[in-house]
Amino acid sequence: MQIAVLLFDGFTALDAIGPFDTLGRLPGAETVFVAERPGPVRADQSSLSLVAAKGLDEVTRPDIVLVPGGPATDREMKNPVLLDWLRTADAATTWTTSVCTGSTLLAAAGLLDGRRATGHWLYLDRLPPYGAEPTAERVVFDGKYVTAAGVSAGIDMGLALLGRIAGDAYAQTVQLMTEYDPQPPYDAGSPQKAPADIVARLRALTAPAESR
Image (tube, rainbow, N blue to C red; front, side, top):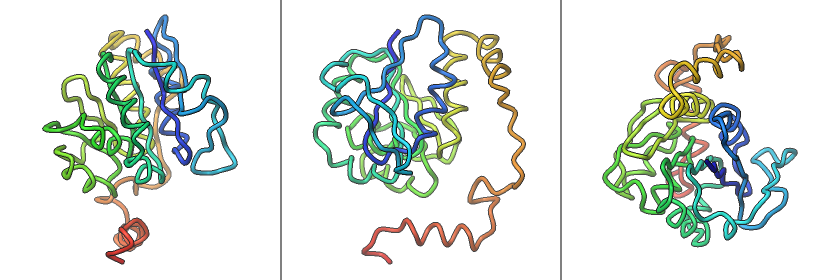
């Protein structure tokens, strides 16, 4: 089973690495990082890069596609090379997945039309113009499409899909091995729980320029 993790300049590292460190533990899985061109790809914190072992043209029939998000997704939603690859790869996948704003890339490629999907809470409004039905759930399964909410939700998505493929006991074993037992020091991980002034500040920072 081949798992293709898409990289592009400005992706969010945990979006890719969280599922990689859970879903990538499938028995017999080959995980390959892919980008338009092989080589280092800078994350949104530019001090970190991941290396794409292969170009998009070298990986056309993966079993699972994972699309991370990041600040650059608004740009990549207009990238015909990336969107064409998503459509081509999706034709062969058993599962097509995303984390955070990665769902906007799936939507822009026309893959979520008429489907329920989640993503980062600040960007859910980017989904309806492409025919997707946004939901604030943490992980959403709709057919073979699996979308996760913001950043850390990619770990949950990886475990949930791992359970679907390899069984609950195997997914629980991976959860225990990685000691994934969240006990955050603050209860501010969603807009419903975070202080209102912080929510407002983040909304203002990410609003389209024309509405500021």
